[in-house]
Every structure is written in structure tokens, then in C-alpha cells.
Length: 398
Image 1 (cartoon, rainbow, N blue to C red):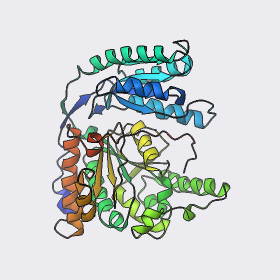
Image 2: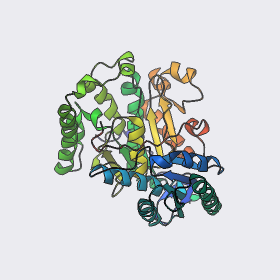
Image 3: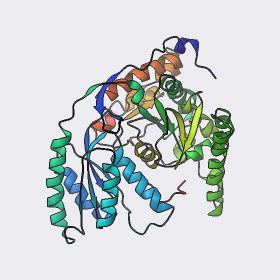
Image 4: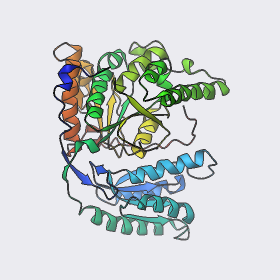
């Protein structure tokens, strides 16, 4: 489906924004020192290191030992992807064993950004020594990262993840279509968008497949849904029995098919260029689907590990979940929610619900908000410290 004439008539390429040019050619919209905890055994000391360094950001896993394939590759790919995210200006890797700590550090370092590490093995299992060396090495990295300066960069360098949580009827009818129209604008002007939550393609996968770049991508979309159904069936469960959740039902959604039809509206109407595995970076610009979990924190961590610098997150009654690495713009089309949660909603689309603004008009306004946030304006998730990364442990996670 082509973009409406009212939208295409204004396409002149995405406006530039002031961001950070990275050594690997990608552009960051933030410049964090990332404290990357790669083992659950190192979680507490990683928290202490991050708390001791002004402005440092923590991304951590609570697992990290005993993985076998295919979960081992998934674990490493997510951690390395988070470290390589362009919003991280430097990375301190905190681990337990020396070999894995060195492996993750080397893979992140290949992107050209400053990386240091500390492990329990290196410090003879002395947590206080890990803490001391972690603070010292992190401090040096933070000083190095602080030398970066924002510069004018093309908006087409943006990679945006789209997500929804605690959806209701207004999500599928208004806020997701507004995001979908924004996705069309972004992709048409050279940016990249990633959408996920495979379970919430169920019942709408044929609609997505019709928009696929070619027959192979269409088949990948159908197969991704079939794998989720088979995975659930093998455990004795049905996907239609636990989704939608109780908050969705309270909001007026009755079946997974109904929820899916609203959820896929976030992808707009443009061509789907490929299906990604968890944490897989897009090979080129365009719109991509990520075959991943439907739990929002895990889904967004997959996007961030794939290189997304920013998230669009729609909700009905409210949902405070945000990515730690990628500023998360919270969107609602319920006036009551926008009024009740003024410090948690970044974009009010209830003007469309009430008829005073068109979907296309709200999309253009949301696009301006994206560029504003990319240039440094904080989201409420950042202001309130709600950001969290949640790497998934099991490749077959629903």
C-alpha cells in the first residue's frame, strides 16, 4: 500500500540530528559508559561499579554459565550486540571467567570503541578487588568517552525498534497505526525499523507475508510463527490460551488474532525486507521483523543488541518498561492515560482518538519527536531511571 499523498508530498529526506559518529560508521544518540555484566555471579559488583561512576549505565544478565547451543550463541550475541550498540561510547565488561570475558571484550572492541574488562578470575576471586579495578578502569573509559562531541548527522542513520505493551482497543485502532504511519515515513526517508514479538503475528502472519520483499522472506515469516506454535504445543500449551493477557482483556481485546491485527499495525504498510534472529543487525536499511519473544523487555533488548538507538512503545493504560540503552518514547491514544501519567507518557496520540488530528498528522508530529529525542531530549524512561536490559536465556522463549 503506498503512503498517502498528504505524507509523500512532504518527503525530502530525514532531517539531520546532532549525534555521535562511531568508528564503525554507525551513529549514536547517547554517549554512555556501559557497564556490561556478562555473568549473574558478577551482577552485584557490576551494580556497585556502575553506581560509583557518574552517568554510567548498567546492562546485565542474571545467567551466564552452563549454556549449551543454541542458547550459548544467543547469550553471547545479545551481550556483544549490547556492547556494540552505538549509544555506548565505551564499555567495561565485567565477568567471572577470563576466557569468556576476553571473548566478549574482543568482539565488542572490533567495532572500534574503547573497551576494558575485569574478571573474578583475574582478581583471584576477590570481589573487593574486582570492585576496585572495575571503578578504576571504568573511570578511565568514562573520561575517554566524554571527549566525544555531538555533530550534525543524517537522520537516515537511525535504527528504531517498535514495541507495544499493556495494549488495549486504542492501541490497535489509533496508537499502533500512528506508529505504523511513522514507520512508513522513516523507511521512505532511508532509516531502518525493527519490529518483533513473533507470537503477536499469529493470525496476521498472512498479512505480513503479503508485504514481504520476496517469496523467501514471506516463507520465513510464516515459518517463524509455525515454530512458536510448535514450541508451545511441545510443552503442552497453546498460544491462544495465554495471550492476550488479563490487562489486554480488560482493555477490550478478546483473542490473540484480534491482538495481532492491532500489533502488526505498528509495522505500517511498507515492504518487509527480512526476518532477523534475536540480536541480528539488519544487513541494509528498511523494515525488518525480528523472530523473538513477546515479553517486552526481552524483545527490546533484542532490538538494542541489533543496533537500535531508539524505541517507540505504545500502550493503552500505561507501561513503564523502557530500554536502558535506547531511549524509549512512550505513546498512548487514551486521553485518560495521558492525563493520569503525565510523567510517564512522552507522546499523546489521543488527539487522533478525539478527531482533532489525523493519523498522518500525528505521525509527522511523532517523527519530529523522534528527531528531538535523537538530538538529546530525554524521555521519561531516562529521567526516571526505568531503563533495563533483559537478555533472554532460551532461544525458544515465547
